[in-house]
Image (cartoon, rainbow, N blue to C red; front, top):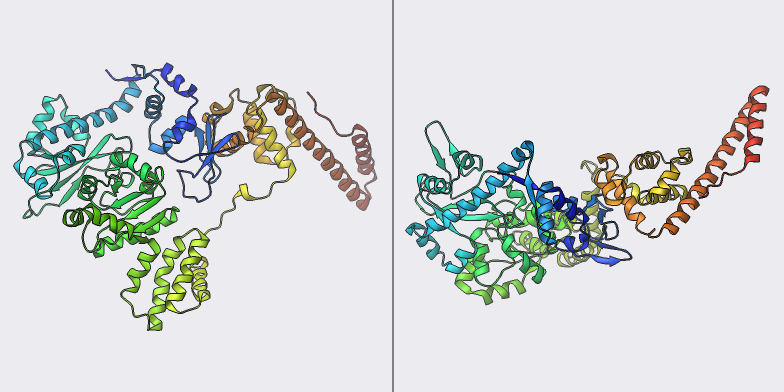
Length: 587
C-alpha cells in the first residue's frame, strides 16, 4: 500500500530551524550581520546576492529574485516534488519520517515515480548479477583493465538477452507495465524487448545518489548497432541535468575545491581507480547550464580534460563558453591525442598529476588552439585571430581578467590594445545583435517615501498588532502603486514570515522575499513600533504637502479662468487643511 508522509512529519520539517546548515551543503555562506550571504546557486554571479535569514528561516536572491523557505530551496535546488523535499530535509535533520495512507489522487501521482525508481534499483542488481555469468562482459572490463573494486564501486554490470532480464525482474515481482513505463523495455505488437540487451551497463545516479537510468555499451566491434545507448528521456532521466559520477565525486570535489571534467564513463571510472576521485562526465552531450549549476553547488573551479581530437576540441570550446558565462574558473589540460583513461593506463597517475600542474587557463588554451593554424606574420591572419578570440573574451565577466588577456594578446601580436578593445565593443554593442537592456528596479535610487513604504510593509509582515493598526489607516498616503497593492495583500493575510511567503501569489513572491529580508533588522517589538510610526508620519507629512500643493495648483487655475465660485471653495478647503495640520499617527 502506498503511503504518504504524515502531516506530523511535514510540520516537524516546517518547524526545523536549520536552513543555514542545510543550504551550506550546496554553497558557501558567510555571516553578515544577522544574515548569511553567498553566491546564488540558481544563476551565475560574481558578487554574492543570495541571502539566508536564520531568524526568518527564508532565503532570497537579490539578483534573480528566487525566494522561499527551506522546503522551497530543496525543491528548487534538486528539482524535487514537495514530498521528496520533505523527506530529504527530514533525513538531513534526523527527523523520523512517519507515513500514512494517501489519498487516491496522491497515490496515482507519486506511486509511479517510486515504482520506477524501485524498478531501476532492482534492474541494477540484476545487471550486476548477470555480470558473473557473462564472459563477454568480463572480457570487456578486463580488456579495459578495470579493477574489481572499480566495477563494484560504480555498480557495473551487463544485460544478456531481453528474455533473461524480463524473467529475472518478474521473479522480483516487477510488473510488465512497470518495465515498459520505466523505459527499460519497449513493446510492439509481437514482443517486449530491452534496448540494453547484449551490452555492458553503467548505472547513472542523480545528485541524491538515486539510480535514475542507465548507459549501455555494445562490446562487439563488428556490430552495426549504436555504440552507446541511454535510458529514454523522462522526468527522472534528463541528460542535460545529470553528470556521470557526481554522486561518487561530491565529497572529493568539496575537499579538492575543484572538479575534473571528462567526456566518457570509462574516463571517470579509470580516474577514480587511479586516485582522482573528483571527476565527472557530461553524459556524452555538450556541457549544459544545468550541469554547471550542479557543479557550482560544490566548487567554482573546473579543469577540462576532453580528448584532443576535433570533436573534443569543439566540445572544449563550447564548454569554456558556458563555464565562463557562469563565472567559473576554468583551466584546460592537453591530453596529447588520448583520453584520460588511456593516458592513465599508459603513463600512470604521476604523469596525470604533472599534466594537471601544467594546465592552462581557458583563454590561453583557446588562443593557442586558434593561433596554431595561422601565420601571425600575415596581418589578415592576425585580424582573423582577434575576431575569432573575441567570443571567449566576451564570456569573461571579470573586467580585470579580460583586460589582462587583451594586454597579453596585444603584446604577442604586436598590435595596440585599443584595436582589440574597439573590436570587443563592436561585438558587445553591435546593433544587429538582440541585446535588450532591462531596467533593474532594485538598482534605481529610491526616495525616502518609497523607503518608508517598504519599511512599513516589512514591519507588518512580522507584527500582527501593527498590521491590525494599519487596517485603520487611509492607504492613499502610499505613493507607490505596487507597494500599496502588496501592503493591501499582506493586511488581508493572517500569516507571518516564511509561511506568508510560502503561501503568497507568484505576482508578489519575489518582492515579498526582498521585504522579509529587510524585516530581519527590526528584531524587537519596540524597534518595530518606532520605525512603523516614524515611517507612517513621514508619509503623512508628504501627503499633507502633496494635498496643499494640489489645492494651490487648483487656485491658480481658477484665478486664471476667473471662476470665482470654485475659487472660493478651494481657498476655503486650503484654509481648513492648513488649520487641521499634519495628521500624526501614534500607538
